[in-house]
Image 1: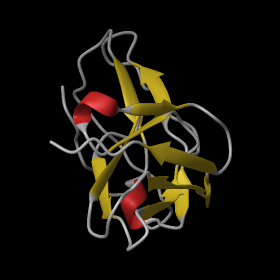
Image 2: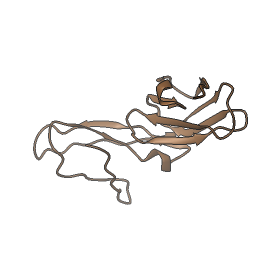
Image 3: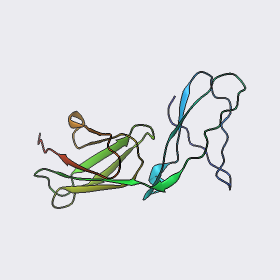
Length: 137
């Protein structure tokens, strides 16, 4: 169905109404606004018409760091990171030695790439170091 954004009240609560039944929904904080913190995504299912579903508490804690280097890289190369549940793609650029850093990454599987044909899927816990190849085209 695609992403939907909704605000919270002063206590951090939110309500979404009119959701179709029989679907799983991923509920998460907009992580890029929390850096260096991240919220863990929750998966909820709407089981029947009119039923209320509680997503529970989305815990916000210090996010992990995904850092790496592009072998033979140069300054300014675009590096992409996407999370499995939180949707959206982050972009950063390499420094003069081909290094890159993403802060505040939620503890869920992520993919990191420079070239879409060379995605590196990461499921490790904690901070991660990635080495990407440098295929010039």
